[in-house]
Amino acid sequence: MSDTRSYKAELVGVFGYPVAENPTIVMQEAAFAAADLHWRYLTIEVLPEQLADAIQGLRAFNMRGINLTIPHKVAVIAHLDELAPEATLIGAVNTVVRDGERLVGHNTDGKGFVRSLQDAGVDLAGKHLVFLGAGGAARAMAVESALAGAAQITIVNRSASRGETLVELLNERTPAAARFTLLDGKYAVPDGTDILVNATSIGLFPAVDDLPDVDLDSIKPGVLVCDVIPNPPYTAFLQAAAARGASTLDGLGMLVGQGAIAFTMWTGRDAPVAAMRRSLEEIFRP
Image 1: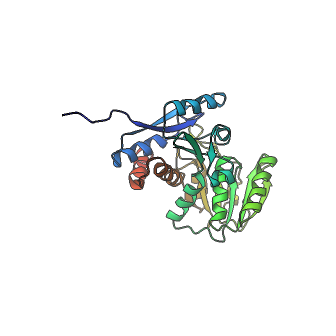
Image 2 (image 1 turned 90 degrees about the horizontal axis):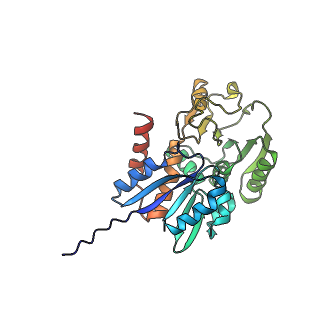
Image 3 (image 1 turned 135 degrees about the vertical axis):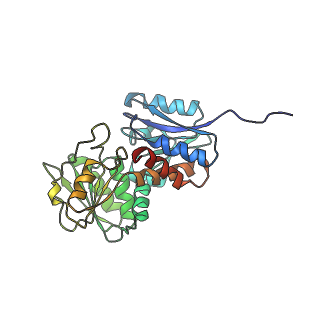
């Protein structure tokens, strides 16, 4: 009787620099176990100048896909065969899926953010959102928020060119009204803001005490303050906002939301979302 057991694992993972603090491996490995799939998730440090070689390695290893994090979400586009419509619109890629011999770039960041808001009972229709930052994550979240019904979006950034480019995209390609504010000193959150989002890497481990340049006393009760940082999830920024009476939403919901979408793209299976969320809560909230 022949043994038909396969010892070959299907490989996915994440390319980033730095990447050691990225906890995606925890939830994806938990998802593979819950779904009884012989898959592995690899956390791989890739320097910017080595990205092209890393993508060639992905092809050579017949990996099923990859996530991209800082600083590769835009640079990876030049090394892919095709972009999904939302990745073309956003101009950034956080998930690559192998389709035969072709590598197709997608962006699940924004969808994960919108899903986390919906799971928290937040309806984006008619809301005014303020995003701190104008990088790949901010672009994805702002675009998907606009498409989900947000009425007004303010982009706050130190780089005028990047911020104005994102605002131009939002005004031309989405129904929302967008405007840009140049960050010069402490940003005062304007009255009428419904949702304030830290879409930067400020506060990411190990710099856990760092705060965005926001006048904290301008954060009023009734504002929902969100942070994309998953490690640690309850950032110093969220703690400061909560101390001023604001509601908060941490980065775990977004991380799970976008990870669940990527899981399904790679495997063709429904994602075991509960197992994914539980695995992250176990490491961050023992």
